[in-house]
Amino acid sequence: MAVHLRSALFYRDPKAALAWLEAAFGFELVLLLEDAEGNLVHSQMSFGDGLVMIGHQWSDLHQSPLSVDGRNTQTVHIEIDTDLDTHCERARAVGAEIIEDPATQFYGDRTYRCRDPEGHIWTVAQSVQKVSREEAEAATGLKITGWL
Amino acid sequence: MSAKVYVALRVRASRERAFAAFVGEIGSWWQPNALFQTTPRAPGRLAFEPGEGGRLTETLPNGKIFEIGRILTWSPPEALVFSWRQANFPPDLVTEVEVRFETVGSETRVSIEHRGFDRVPADSVARHGFPDQLLGLRLAEWWRELLIRLKDNAR
Image (tube, rainbow over all chains, first blue to last red; front, top):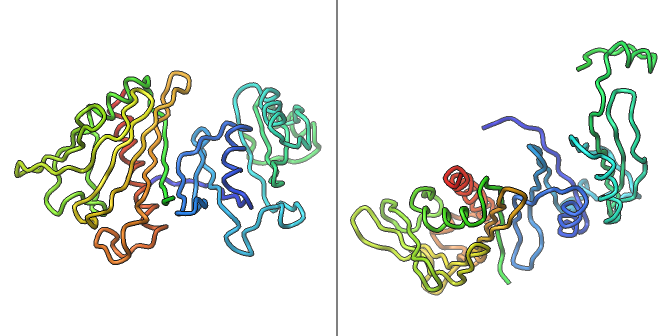
């Protein structure tokens, strides 16, 4: 059994989220369990070698941002290798609220940030230039350890 | 409506090839699963009779043939629906498996939707005492293993 990190996200309407995440980000549904009433019980979507689980608000402690005044306590990052700006337009076209437009960051990634229909914040990044540790330190004034 | 289990993955092959491998090579990629035994005997080799109404059979090591189901929809290379029942199901219970083949670039996305396993009665040996959710998850995991074997077979 391989070792992984995975993230689970909670939605008031998880089935709508499955359709939206496919349309906006190109995630692919790889597993779905539904009960006899058609309610989503469990699901998984893949993107590259990554996987997210999309579920409902199954306890008071597992809530959609829509249910907690839009607050997020973590965000999921999507890493792509081409056409970040096109990715952003595709997400915008299906209703993503772009909260930070595409911009190239000091560490060499071009990124944008958006909110999905229930308020989950997603960051999308594409590496566009190689930046050395010295360059990054000069740009930020920070001491950086573990620069890859 | 009945509960359903859905799994999907991409196969590095055309739709035609993936469909042909699913139907024609099920004897190679199919693997038995102890939780979902088709018959109480040692597992055998599966085969489809192509075309609507064709049987999905399992030929047991003793030569006997068990009919698992029949092809209900035959639409190569897009879709295939067949009925699926285990020997330990109640006589009136039939579940249904829908297989879809969708072109994605140079690959094919193969998806399985298995419907009706929640209708296995609570006291049936086919359920192993599992609640719907756990039984469904195990069924999904098994189909995923089978699809990975199909993927290796189809290229």
